[in-house]
Image (cartoon, rainbow, N blue to C red; front, side, top):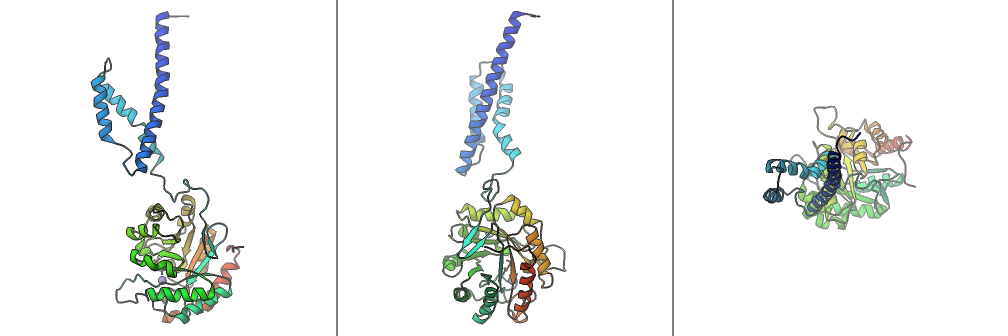
Length: 361
Ligand code: PEP
Ligand code: MN
């Protein structure tokens, strides 16, 4: 039953306008989002409040009515909020390290080593490079079981300035000599952008240590390098901070970034740090980067390395790091936690025999 023809017509007109508004509102939101993205890529804040204010003043000046200006302002404020609302509900800016940006696992290839993907890596070597004989002893033991990623610190971030600070550039040279002899890949910590300038002469992978995880100049400089970076989690860093530190390196254009959980400081005293196993699946889930676990600096002990390494692999880690020294009791740094060659062999047979460690084929 038709109540009133005129009324019906007006109702239909209103419905038509609402349909148009729906199209226009969505079209507007799409364009506003594109502006936001463009502004973000130019490093500008996504929202330009001054522009919004000017536009609103213009619109109220042109307003023919009958909608009053106060209402118009409220409506436009609401409308302009649409893309920002969306951004808020979708969360923060999408990071380069994020799985959302790149769904496949990043695989870092360096010489004969492959880190990430389907195989595991065991990185071993002394805390500090001390001598050629020391490095050769560890390298030979590793090589005899087919392991080829050798670590050794030349620049040591020591708590006390009176403790052994590392052999510096000489240490890098020794590391390279021994690695060349045994055809191995090397990882060593770099502490400052100035050291990075010659790092590529000697080492294959730059390690950024826990104490430097938020050394932003170093992260930026490492981002400019054409070398893989192994980034350690800071001593008390949240995963958010860890991931942002990796983002610094990637934002500089360096895509070969690897993360390594090395324990965080808690109240627990039975271990040097607390190995955060949950970090492994979380980092694997949220980022596409290889994730390793340093069982030596996290536990600070020699007796629970194997179960911790197994736990790391079971949790999805791409590799393990362990400190090995031919004579741990005489080591110039971290003497309490380094295992000797015999213990290393036992550790390796336990790990490789566990069925958890997948070798590169
Ligand atoms: C190291 O690996 O030699 C080291 C100093 O570790 P971290 O930065 O994790 O303390
Ligand atoms: Mn150490």
